[in-house]
Image 1 (cartoon, rainbow, N blue to C red):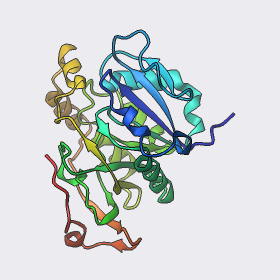
Image 2 (spheres, one colour):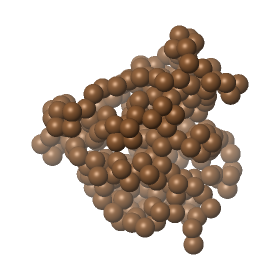
Image 3 (cartoon, one colour):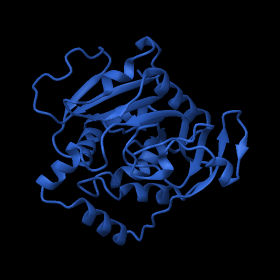
Image 4 (cartoon, helix red, strand yellow):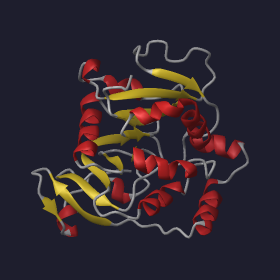
Length: 259
């Protein structure tokens, strides 16, 4: 039987995962998304107190290696959902924020999206920092840290999820595969999350180095092979009043402080 929820969150989770915080500030039964934990730690019975509808599988390795293996295990279950979100486990958010993020993704029928990074976040790209006066911005970029794919987008992008051991570089491929649509890719400012770990300092990169791969070289080689550009463009956006905004100066007039 198909789920009534339209979004599946697949989280590569370690023992320090922040996902328990995602259930705060609202009753769990109001959740509009399902959660599957892809565990990469060493415990035999992790997350014993998880809600009964949260599923679990065990996949060792980096985010890319484990995600590919997990998607293969989930198989046809993925067809039950209109969107799949693949966040990192060091993102802080609460339940109302995530519910609203998925509502906005559905409202604008986005093929590729991520929540903006709120104040105090560690950010690798300035474009991902929240513009608090905006609902969302239509962009040419979504970071691999937290991409949400439509069913169509996942089908196109899934073959590249394991293209680099570190996951570095593949986020430049996703928009190209989608054809850089002017209204199909967005960073959602109304629902910021906090990225709590410095870029490149988490277990994913440590596991990449242990496997003998250099993330920066992987990205360079991948981008050269596929002739990719680092496009960080904003086509326009929707402000909190629901009005379309095209002036870049107006869109970027307010930006939260990130690290």
